Image (cartoon, rainbow over all chains, first blue to last red; front, top):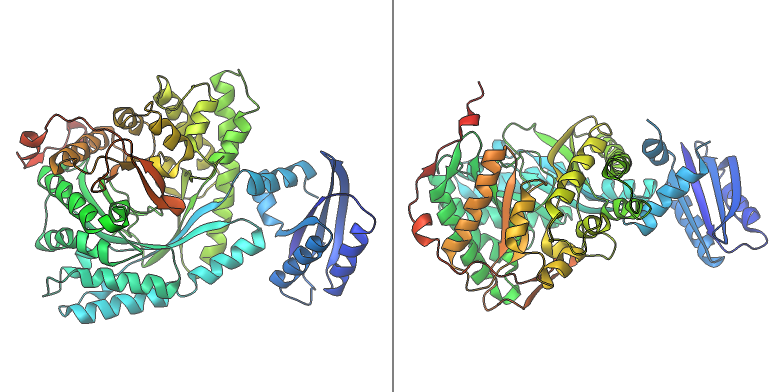
Length: 89
Length: 452
């Protein structure tokens, strides 16, 4: 199962590193990654493959949310299908 | 990979524009629960609901979490209880309401609908007993919703039932007067009621429906409002096209959630209701959409046209997004549940007469409208008759959910809290309709009911 992780907040050193370390702990594979500064906010979008993840979706999503809180970032992980459904016919 | 802009727009819709799934409603047939012994029948009802809907709430929460889309309500609709109770030898129909309430609480859902009777052409003994028990049922339970269908395009309007419902609404308000008359917020009178409606208070599981089904209601006034803000001065064809595109996206989320819920609950997917359902939250209002189109205040001249266009565009956009569309499908205009409607009604621009006109072109009817506590039962019946006539002639669903809270007068506000919001008491015409209502009988079906 693929998921999309979105990270929004103030730019600082180590955001990508921290998230990638956390994902590696769960054996989640990063497929794609893009980042930009939008309306003065650091915005990162990451596609990950969770098919070999070693924990349930809810646990990983919660761990990322908590990680985000500690870094004053809003981190969401959602299944890819919702974006496909809304933006493709 | 997906377009970055698309991903961020989805996040923005959910985080800032209140995009959500308004309800996942599981319809359950209770026809197999009938028994001459009412205690046995109630036992059957409780067991069946709990068995079928046991996982409804946890599965909905799982979907919410994985897809990152809030599901505001989890609900159950059941076969109209008048049909289930008809076999019972007892008159104590409120026992069924208590059973539904208990089952709803066990399953953890927000509401359960179906304490209902369908009497568009006439009332059976069971229908009469059920309707008579509605005030008691709604005053003694928390989560039970009730509806009565008094008319249809095929059958005409049952004016005896219309007259009776005026009294029942008054009685329900009186019995719940210690709670702002909240019983009436859970009671709706329909013309052309639909069998697969996921929205409360009017949801029930029709007899033409399968054993169980998952029906979804979407929301998204905030999303539509937000795209219209970028269209200042653009002509209506551009506005309509933009609303269509937005409705498509909103409905696709509904379809996705419906499919997932159906699969995980091993329950057939019924319909997605192409709805635009407001909440009292700032930025989630249908009235504000109409105002964004260029009306100073919702309710002024032009409001009906604006709503007609909005309603049609929502359907056109949504219809392609779902494999099965049903329910009420359209924009809702519940006054107490819409921040902009509350403001427009409080200011006096939005009146009951204008709302009645608006119901000709939108999803349902006169919804969540507070009227003075001393409004007579006959006047309420006459309001129901007018709405039913609009539904009957125009081949659409119409409904009345009015709140004649005892002791409240024009200028007061009824506070119900939560999604039910607050309703400014609106004036009704003081002139009597009593002689009209007291005629009783049936308004025959219109000529266009004969389509065969």
